[in-house]
Image (cartoon, rainbow, N blue to C red):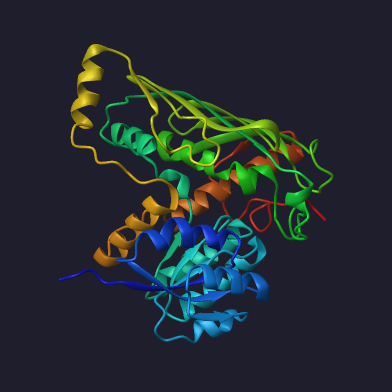
Length: 358
């Protein structure tokens, strides 16, 4: 019996176009996009025509009323995410949502509470987890072959200028909710915790040096992980050569990603065993490894499998909360000049808003 083809509406034709081109369009046996929503009629028509999407609307409420829609994929500006997720869950839709999932830890916790009582689930987007190099490293770590984590370094060196910030909601605390840490480096920082585990404390410095904007476009941070391992983060939007790079040192192996800025999960990663015995164990562990497609193609394949089986989603609300907890800690540390301990609960001064006091 053929697996169910899940019906989809995509909201937001900017980033949403990538979901279509790299994700749904590459899995026609798994998904069918029935509807598209965007406030810009010209963009709505162009993307709708490109992907032959039959229904087009400027109203999010129209999608909620479509009884034959299984999934609403939210790719709108960040301040809209929380309310749209809650409305889609209440309408009985499965939800996919771009990062950042919400605008505060309080809002993430409201979404988590709503999902507990809903008939459907929410999958946050962290597409950089998919790619052959990253997934090989993940398998080695999950099998316990990497051993004790020692240290990690993460670099996000991208370029953004006047054209990017010409979009009115970008570069502003009220509408973008943050800068390079939230909107760009959030992906690479998720990969750090995906492979090395949760974070115990953070010390950060941020600056706005590249663009005339409100939010930060340069940042550095030092982290202590719950395991006792250490990590450093560096990110900027002023690099004339764009790279994303992770170098992670474990007891029995060192991993180093490629420098591909927007696909750091892709292979080949450098996987350097610490001994001949470690090399043999890693070789055996990867003997039956199958190539994992990159970015949205890999993520949406895993998402379909989870929907069909009812199993764990490839990215969960717990993952999104962990990511935004780091954002909250980084912003609080940069503002106060002090180290910040995690986890962050409802009693923390930035639980309801990680942005500077306004």
